[in-house]
Length: 81
Image (cartoon, rainbow, N blue to C red; front, side, top):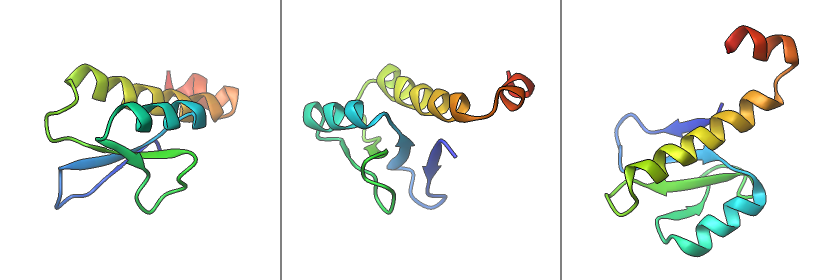
């Protein structure tokens, strides 16, 4: 799992994140907080109220996807790519 969101509330989503980057993003962006109901070391909750540019949101999602993809066994990654 690389992203979690609510079906009934689209004002935020959770993404997996490198622990050091997770802290950096939280320090620089009030819209990014420790992952709600997730492992706070590896997950961030991101508010989507328009404060962060779309590119930055997409970059966070891409980073999360790549973290999970790269943690899979090589043969599984090859099937997905």
